[in-house]
Image: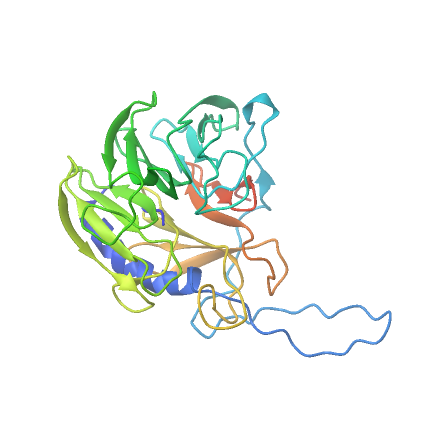
Length: 336
């Protein structure tokens, strides 16, 4: 999950909003393939997504973006690993998470790696700096607060590391940690696969806790005051009001909300099940919940892979979108 907004009250409103969108995003899927029996040498039929899915996801909205292109010049001929985290800082430069060149999530991709998982780029994609080697098991998301500090969630677990949220300054100095290193659980001082952080102007900290698929896994929001003291928690697994299932959301300073759906799929009910919903990026208004644009996933409908397209999103001042992909890439979607 990715939430960024300058107003504390808005963060609270978004918790209700993301439940509705999370139904479309993280519990999504694809419509069952139409039955057909093509003759030998006959081309396979191309299936089209319905204009609106049964749960109300619009697949027919206008797309004001060009196709995504690979972005970011990594150092030393390095290639992107799986990633879900990317954020624009107050200075316009862009920070991204890389799982140390490895494919996967919720694993141990960075546990024994000599690579830095936190990387900084200028808007053109030129590499500027990196840090963080040896600190993470599996970094998940990155947030830049209004003071320029970086917040990174680690949802991995190995040998006394992981299951924490870190706060850094831009030089890489650790300013705060939340959670217990190497301890996973439902307590008020522990996380179970934390995914993202939002920080209000008064310093209040909101942590999205829960990326597991078991019915008993954490699926909640935890709130802390600016020095890390626990204040409250709410939410549980599900698709109703006050319930969560791994949504990933980005909101810019103009209240434009960007929702990445890289998981919608057909098959049996459960994680990712959302019949008739095409994967892609849906863009709307965070205040009223309206959805205005849809950037379709490049994968054909219905998607067959476990994950395609961006999982984490950010946008620059010009409205260009940057998508962090589990499938080992970062792409830029320029406005037409």
